Length: 369
Ligand SMILES: [Zn+2]
Image 1 (cartoon, rainbow, N blue to C red):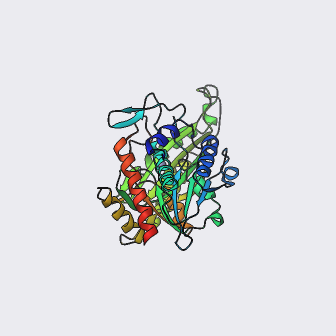
Image 2 (cartoon, rainbow, N blue to C red):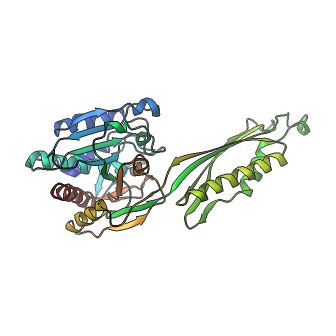
Image 3 (cartoon, helix red, strand yellow):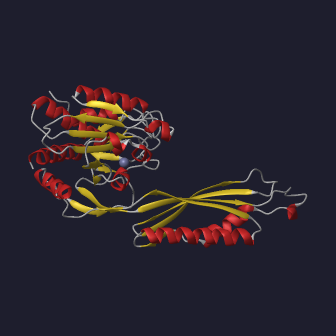
């Protein structure tokens, strides 16, 4: 008997795998993929990301006359993701206590394993399949960025992640992180405050002067973290501010980054402070052609599972953003996880099963084209 997708899912979410701590799940998956007939390699991405382990790459041989297809899902989860206790609560699976569930993205992993197990059991012919389980997707797509691309034999495939069931991402934005360090001058706050320049005041003024939130229909900005100051009796001499910009238009992102820098610089000077500013591209946008073969194949596979495919614009990034810039063609398909990145995360039992059927259909269709 092949293992049902539900069994895989319940077991996987109970293996802790917050970003950078994917050692246990990676080794579990290596063993399982080998049982399913794949050759498995763990790359060196962990050494680059500073995590416990690298990406798990599995190669399941198939008909050598057919083009191989890659299937990708990420192994890491956001926090709080330790000690997850999943429960089936009527039609849904959720976590029992105050943790995320981890359906993002163990739903994707469970579906892949369940389908491979079905092929192992039936012995049905299929195209060669390449399985890519990445590390540290949630903290900036680090695993995908560090992936040893030369190891991959396939050029096209699917990233199973996020979104509602049936949703295929047709466009996702560029994203860049920025960091501003404002330096003033410390002084005793009671004895000689006039000798100091308060970096907190400069930071406050600069933050209020820049735009925030939804900038236009394709651009957002968020000032997300601030730290600085030592004690109430010291004029603060250093504040660090962290933010991000996303836009489907790369020029807009660059221009907005320049604007933020200019504003911070002007305000820092006004407050007799100095500025250090960095803008770093985290990932670049993706855009797919609606008539692309992978999109059409996915649509057919959903149809056969009784689901209508929907093309959506995504505000977030995924491993596909990195792959597509590296010359691979990757389509992101939603597997039905809901309220991800929160302790209210859940997935419908039925969506888990229907997504698995979709994946089986995709591989069947791909292997017969
Ligand atoms: Zn995800």
